[in-house]
Length: 357
Image (cartoon, rainbow, N blue to C red; front, side, top):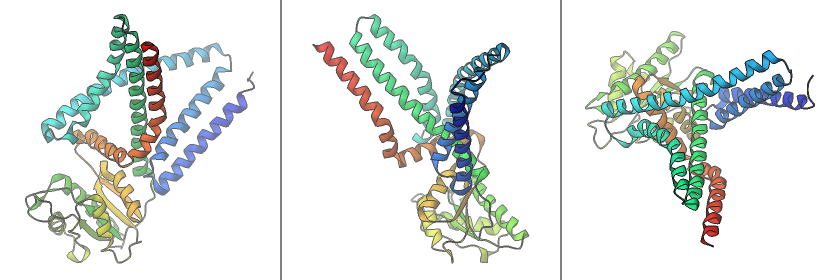
């Protein structure tokens, strides 16, 4: 027999399904919005919570046993997943450093793994402080520790939203026939393209040949200026690579003034006869999502297409892209964290004042 709350749970299930439908439509239309990933998580949690609540009202012993077993297995999976993620991040971080050097951007995976190890040990520190008689210090440390957990949880939620949005954008965003394919530069080796840049060019060549086979010939726009440590502009080396792949020169327009991704797109748009024409942006798979954000910013109509990246580099690359997005929208995230931070500081202040009196 159902409780009076049955209608409420059914409403939340319907609401959760509606949120998922909203997210799918959003991914099809403009999947670079991080809110779609966040809303999809909330929608799934609403559906699961309400479904479990409805099942618990059936009063069937065997079903109650199964639900309890599922919950225990889920908790065990979370613990194993947490430890496994730490091990993976540490190994991947060490691999990145060995192969790519100790630049700050290559330390993200290792840093994330070390942080996940350090965070649980905060409880031990707080217990030691409390046992030593430093009660107010333990309380203050506990408040700060709670704030760190909240901030970490918030960042983890945002990262999961980012991953969902990235994957959904690649799978669900609408396909079309591009009139232009912009290829983003990625550094050179002397006058030759790097393997990373070659993969982006190969992705653009694949799109070109697919369209050509269907009777359409999009214009390819290799985009990249000359860095201070480069012999030639990136786009010039990219043009030579495209010619070597058999792309006719009349279907290549070189953009050689840009120094950032935003400039890549803005300056390439100026080379398009129709700035509103449908366009693909060929880049690395981990960079597709942020490229889509920049496309929206400059008013390009289209989508990003990703080239495969070496497996060992993917985790660090996604962390770097996520960090860049967080920094770019830092004020929004600071506002989201502020209420809890102020509340924690207020409680800490009250405890300190009470101990002083």
